[in-house]
Image 1 (cartoon, rainbow, N blue to C red):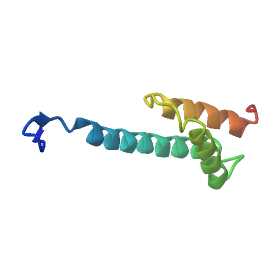
Image 2 (cartoon, rainbow, N blue to C red):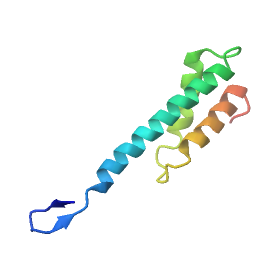
Image 3 (cartoon, helix red, strand yellow):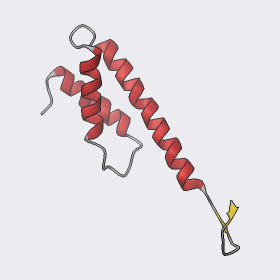
Image 4 (tube, one colour):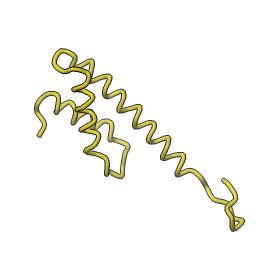
Length: 86
């Protein structure tokens, strides 16, 4: 809590929480890249995997609920790399 100019107190959780959530999502996406790079190493270069994950991640940019984005990104990237995506 901190004092605001009008003398009241306000919570400052949103900004810090959003930053922490973004960092957590970024870490999870890096994990997706690492896993898929290992899984698809025989058929795709690391750059191709990174591009598939980036493309999948970009498709969720405007989604307000971020909790499941890394799981959905991994699913979509796997489909892209397997050739079964749109």
